[in-house]
Each structure stands twice: as C-alpha cells, then as structure tokens.
Image (cartoon, rainbow, N blue to C red; front, side, top):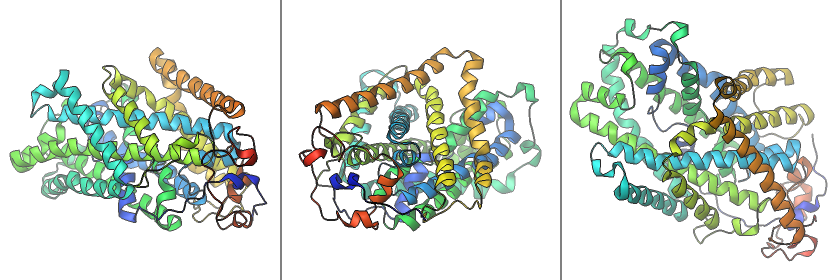
Length: 498
C-alpha cells in the first residue's frame, strides 16, 4: 500500500474543522440537478432520431457514459475527499499544471451552464407573462432569479441541498401521475418507429444525449462538505443514477407510446401537451411550472459546486487566500460573488444560448483528462487506499470500462472540425489558451508576491496523501493555525514552496 511520507506541503495547510452539512438525500438531489432536473430537453433527441433510437439512447447512454463516469467519480471523490474535487485527482496523477487546467475547463463549463438556467426559466414563464420575453422586464427577472439563487447559496449548503430535494419532488410529481395513467395506453407500434440511418441527425442526437446525461463529476467539489463521505457519496451517486434514468426513460416511453403528435413534430413543451392529454389543463400547467422550477434547481446546484470548487482550490494553493475565506454561514463568499457576476453577464448576453452549445467540447476535454488520471492512478498506484473501488479487477478491465466514454468524447471533439464549425472550434481553443495563460499569471503572481496564497499547490500524489488527517505526516501538523495572511515562513506571500 502506498504510504505517505513527511510532506512540507502540509505545513501551510489551512486547518478549519467544519461540521458536515450534506446528508445522503440532499447530496443526491444536488447530483440529480447537476445531471438532469427532469425529462425536459429530451424532446430534441426524438425529433433528431425518432422514437426507437431515442428510447434506446436514454437506456444505453447511461450504461456507456453515465455509469462509467459515476463509478470513476465515486472512486476518486472518496479517495480524495476535498472541495478541490477533480483538481486533486488530476494533480495526483499528472501534477499541478494539469490539475489547474482540469479545474479551469470544468469550472468555466459549469458557470456557463448555470448561466443558461435563468434564461430558460424566463422563457418557460413567457407563456403566462409575455411581457417577460425581453427588454427591461426580462432583464429584471433574470437579475432577480440569479440574486435569489446566490442568496440561498450564501445562506448555507444544507439549505441548498434541501431546497434542491424539495424542488425535485415538485418537478417529478406530475410525471409520476402521467406514467401511471399513460402506461396502459401505450401503443407498441409507435415505439418501434425508426427513420432511415441517413435521415438521423446524428450530431444533434448525440449532443442532446450528452448534454442531458453528463456532469456526474461536478458534485465532487462538495466532497469536503459531506457527512461520512466514504459511504455517503457512492450511495448518493447510485440514488441519483436511478432517478435520472427513470425520469428520462419513463416519460419518453409514455409520451411516444400514447397517441398524439407525430414524433417529427416533437419540440420543447411536448411534455406539457402530454400532460394536457392525460390530465387536463391543471396537469399541463403543473408540467410548465415544473420545467421552470427545474431551472432553479439546476442553477442553484451548479452555483454551489462552482463556488466550493474555487474555495477548495484556494485552500490547496492554486488560488489566492481570499477565495478560501468563508462567511458566517460557512459558505465561500468571494467565489459566490464572482460566479454571480459572471452568471448575470452571460445570461444577459443575446448570443449566450449559442455559446452554451459550444461548451460540450470544453467539457469533453476535461473528461478526457479525468479519465486519463483515473487510469494512470490505477496503473501506477493500484495499492493506494481507496474507500470505494470501481469493480474492475485489472487495469485492462478499467480501460474497457472507459473505452466508450473516451470514444464518445473524441467523436464530439472532432465533429466540429469535419462540419467546419469555426465558432465551436474557436471557443474550444480559446478556452484552452485562457487556462494556460491564467496558470502562468497566477504562478508569476506567486513568485513576485503580488497575491497572497496559503501555500504552493501540491506537487503530486505524495503531498495530497500526506495531507490526509489520518496519515502519519498529517498528524504532525493537526491543530496548526491557518496562515491567512501568507506570512508563515517560506509559505508566505512570496508563494515559495514550504
């Protein structure tokens, strides 16, 4: 077994014991909203590929993508239970440079995703209040929703978890009724329809599946806030996985099987029409309200995960100490402020919805790095203590598990080059370039003493393992004071190594 040796990286570690704030149900709800939020958005898959392929896609995609990603997340999040999340995983495998790139790409993808939801919320409610379709009223609405989500996040992570849980109950309730009432009315002939392969819009279909079934790793940035993380986190992923698969497949099964609109006419709002056929105007209104409320849950969860990621990265030394400081509610104040401002700027941009569709590529790059880190740690450090292990007995089995996810990422990354999508290619390359420049700027600030850091980032696995509370090296430093002003010896404001 890999044994930690004495690591000076621990010397400057901010020791701030906090009581856990996330229970199993609360964490499950946050993960659910990070990935899904209900069957809304699956309509585009039907219009692109037909009933049979859509149903097969929402059954097979969780097996070839969601399940491997969730298993990898469960192993690494319990092995490295830190709010830095996937940043520490990649650092343990490839060092701090790649850890920062992983964190930056994942973070901008999450923030941009969070900025989409207040706009979608407004669009869902335009049917009831057309004056919110744009202009001053629309901007005020987006501002109000975003500030409300920021306030809930500031008030405490436990509040975020339980609000997400209650919102999930409200969103899914009408679909439970529709499934129970609609299943006996299903016509199998309608479900087996499939267009010719040449007529399937493969790019739209695959992107829709990916967009609706990814982001299983984002809640790993809350691992440091979870009660009994080594057992709770895998259970929460399992609960969320079952909820996500059922909440997509069963409503699609009923919606496509019950006589109604032709599948080629499916578009956003189709589930509301299904609710009207099965339960009248009241159920239709409930589905519409559920779609709007789902946007709140997703924005709430994404903002929490992105904020605690910055806090975890600051505690580990990647970001200045100001990002690590917490409010009296034990929430990261400055990260929440930064994220709120960015969400407002992006959500009020007229071109934002087109930009969101381009971020699949950014997330794919981050996932390739994560999967590579998992395989590297399994090959080089298979004896490392892992509270949860992916049930693969050999390195070859791990490679087989991730073959399809790797392939899917590569396909999504190369498709813009074949289709000549210059804007998507440019956004991907600019994101990577910005991550490289930001890393160099932070390192320069560390060397010149322009910014205050708790310490230098961990150099690799040895530093991270040695910082665990149960490790021999860590026990030498338990109880040391937090160096908030960067003045503790060689780990001070000049940012040099300890």
